[in-house]
Image (tube, rainbow, N blue to C red):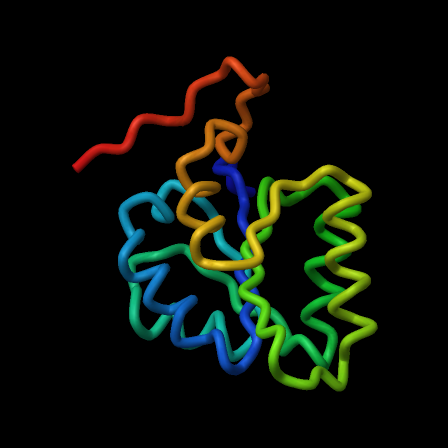
Length: 142
């Protein structure tokens, strides 16, 4: 079992390209984490960034959201990156809301868009450090 922190990556269809580009731009930072992702998103990231330790789960509508939800409830995730498309209808909207609810209940750091994801990826909290408002972010290396 990995001792590295684990992050979950999820993206709605219209946001999958943005998630893959985010992973590609941040491969060095993401390499320090074990990654899990819903089906298609995970497969696309793995194809673009083969050096990353990523485990694809089921697709969201087929249970991938619930797999990630279980990991949240069991305390096995340190962060959730969920690129949400607010402009497309979501037939599995109840599943999406349940996943977000669990992240809120368990106080899991969660990024719902690219801007927040970029900030969260620099957070000391993702590496397991206890943080306060005075704790600096992890330094960004070039």
